[in-house]
Length: 154
Length: 318
Ligand code: SF4
Ligand code: SF4
Image (tube, rainbow over all chains, first blue to last red; front, side):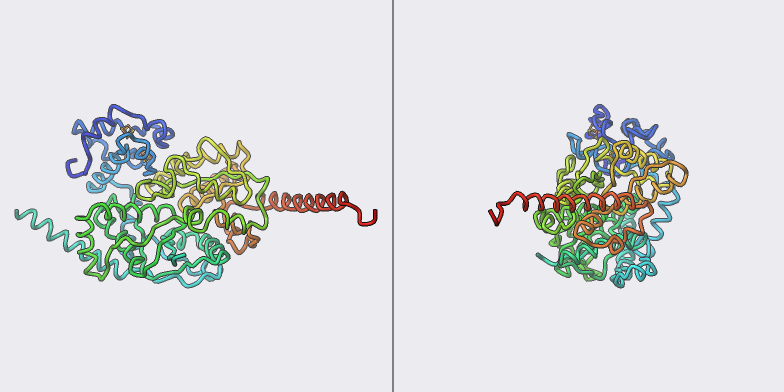
């Protein structure tokens, strides 16, 4: 988890605190959602056991914990790191892959509904930045590749 | 007022063009200087894109802001998710110059530059701060006096607070002020600031999404809310669509879901159809009927008061 960008010092305090249980919607209303249990396992180097868990996808990214937290840190950071890890390991919900594919292909998550626009008398939609986005994505991928090669060489 | 581009995002044009109708109709009626500019893409959605690749998350958002920068316009969005994502990345780049340089190096290859000069605002704080509460009050022809509605803020209207600086992230007030400006009572309720929970539908956990939706809908049903008012397509999906699905399975809530622009437009005297309200899945009929009745009573009252005043006035004869 070193590359997760997680701050272990803050996480340690978090493992002892738990103040935001009282306002985290998922902790309050979804059985089995327990970010501190995940955090303790991350600290103990045992995070892999959560990779398959549906719970790491139940953080709503509502940022409530971050705002209330005395360290301005939040349960959320740990859950985001776990999701990234799970996604890299191919353990993500099917919808995530579907959404990503659409995004990578078109730069959007859906096409404007032209029929409905006409019925509603709405103007033609503005042009999307799809072409430019695709260029940007290609450049990014190429940069990333050389970046990894350089890293491997050094 | 500086010209501003509307950032519609993906969900409104794809799934809810009638929300676009509502927003446009009201902005036109308010004669606000908005524009549509070419070149925007998905904001992008943090929970999806950031999980897969943070680099692409940053670049895509930075590019969108750069598009607005290039046109010299500000950005206003009727979607909380879009504005929060754009603002989060913009703040990140403004405070991390090394990262900003890197991002701009890549953006330069497609002829763009992130300057971060365009302000990024959600529609609610924009109406509150830039258009103003007093001017909104002045536009009200038909008040919602006597109606009680439940505001659902939508987490990303004001969180992360440091990036958006839109309102108090834990105790927001602006939406309340705007609703009360229309004469309605903004209800205080237990789950008012709880997340809608729609995100769960995006990770294949529909039953859990419904658990969260029920939470508010049950409370509002018990409290007798006339409607829920919100200003985010994702929250709208959760409470309109998912409520409708649950009602089809036999759970009754009966809470009409309105966009803020629906209420504002109605108060200004705009026809519900021109606001796309007839396209909502949850029937807004009961809300509109109650309101029409109250408006009639109000009219009758003022006419009775006027007559009384006239009768009490000094006689012209004696
Ligand atoms: S961001 Fe996630 S962990 Fe934090 S309060 Fe919201 S649901 Fe809970
Ligand atoms: S996120 Fe902050 S408030 Fe919540 S348990 Fe951790 S340290 Fe405490």
